[in-house]
Image (cartoon, rainbow over all chains, first blue to last red; front, side):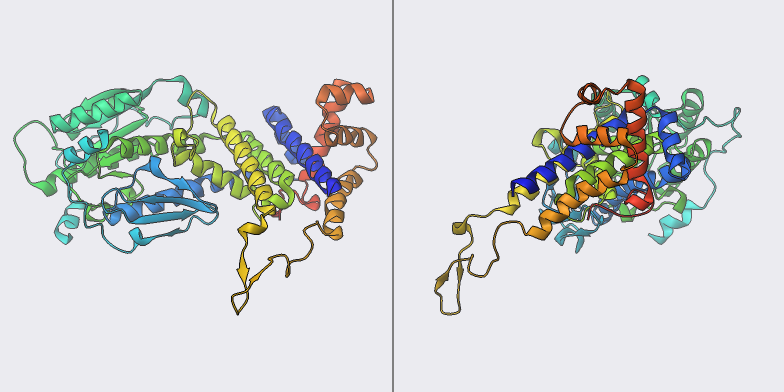
Amino acid sequence: MADKKNHDEHLEKLMNQLADSVLGLSDEAICAETREVGADPEQEAEPTRLVLRQASKALDNVNERLSNLGHAINPNDWWRGQWGYHNNCLNCGSSVSVTTSTGGMQGEALDGLCLESDQSPIRKWEASRK
Amino acid sequence: MAHLLSFIDTRPEFEIPNPPNPPEPPLSPTKSINAAPKSALLVENDTSLLNLLKRSFKDEGYVVRTAANSEEGLRLYRDCAPFNVVLIDYCVPPSNEGEIDHCALLQTNAIALAMTIRELNPSQGMIIAAFDYRNASEVPRPSELMHIPLLIDISNFQLRSLLEKIEVDRAIESLTSPELLRLQQFADFRVRGLGRAARGRTCEDLLHEALLRTLIGAEDTRQGRHWNKDVDFVMHLTGAMRSISSCWKRQFTEKEAYLISELPIHDAEGQEQSPLDNVASGHTAADQCLIEKDEEDRVLAIFKDDPEAIQVLQGLLDGLKKNEIMLRYGLGEKQYAAAARRIRVKLLGPRNGGSGGEKHGR
């Protein structure tokens, strides 16, 4: 058991140190290392931008879907579960969840229109300042 | 709804002259986001709403320019662009001359202004304020503007969230290839370091989670990790990834052991049974120990013909810092750097389970 823990810790330390070492590399050095592996730096880099865009888009999709149904959520009220994030509509209280790995969304808030959303903009703003 | 949609394709109330100068290029790179003060253009004719919006933007640190109609908004945009964000009220009038209360015409002008700004600078961050609508599906827009976020609710947190999102999206687009490679390789090594604790997650999952945590949740409730604009975006994301991967590791360890009292089970006749009766030994199986040891040996075996790389690896496996490794093995700065480079290149190579299109960390 102790051996296993040691191997785990050794490997973790090694990989974490290698991860940190990447941050200290100059732009030229990191591109040169990528070329050494036989890859084109530009082509190798773009999928990472795509991953970030997809994560951003996943949240857009949830917000758009909720907005289309008239639900309003406080972005600061998301709380983290084991595999995703959860929130509730401020008006009707129905729930919504986003799965982190897939960007998928679930919850009763997505089942229908919010019936409590008919407020004037000024009133909504004043309520949010309290 | 159909009658509103029919107005979208009509010509705008004001003619949009050709721009006198070539369009402003999109803002980049990321550093400029941090260096310049943030600026916003608000196009809103309702004074009370305009004051509320101005206050919210100023609270978020923006320098605000305002216009009461779309004509003035366009003139200001041409004179003062680029802005970090432009907010246009969906029902803004074309100009101050004469009263126009035909709702559909007002909408057409807001749409025309948004389209013109989009043509002048396709990456301009914009928000369309549609406070008179209950939900986004009621707000007709041409397909070119569907990606622009709508502000239906004027609450300060909704606006703050949209502004944050616009800045983060711009930072993503401004990332250079070396910065993206740095993020990718950092995520790759962090997930590898987790071993079994990754529980099937990949470096893409780690990046995905880091960005989600940037965009949602509040720092004060420890649920999110908002981007402090004084910190470089790459540094912010690597900090988030470091914290998330450590959290995954902790969660994995916590779930390994359970108290017997936490696992009461009963048989068909309601008799309490020990949960250990049907469970194999809690000790890690010998084959699992071998797998862990094998991974360490496999990494060392890759470098069997490279004694300096073996020395650096052995030092890192022993938890030594760079200077300690150099001292222990008598390596110079250049020798250490070259050996570290060979280690990274070989480990990231596709044949060794690196990021060359393969998933790992499983």
